[in-house]
Amino acid sequence: MRAEPWRALGGLDENYFMYVEDVDLCKRVWDRGLKCAYLPHIRYLHLGGYSSARFSEQVRGLGIYIRHHMKGVRRLLSWGILCGGMAW
Image (cartoon, rainbow, N blue to C red; front, top):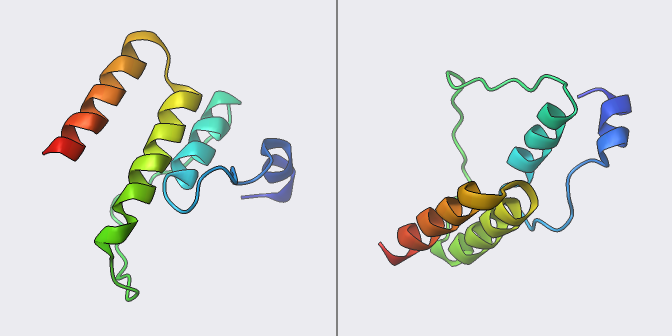
C-alpha cells in the first residue's frame, strides 16, 4: 500500500490485537472508494503454529469489526453467526 492512503486511513486500527485488523483496513479502503485486492490463489505456510488459546482474541477482533462496520439487521445476524459459531 502506498504511504499516502496508509496515512489518510491511519494504518491498522490498534484496537485489534492481532486478528481481523487486515479485514478492517480493507473495508476502510473500500469505503473510501479505493481498491483492495483479494488473491485467493496465493498460499503460504505459517510455521509459527496455532494456539487455541488465541481463539478468544479472534472472537474479540470479530466483535470489534462488527461494532465498527455493521448496522441494523446485518449487525444482528453477524452477532448471531459469531455466537452460534462459538457455541458449536
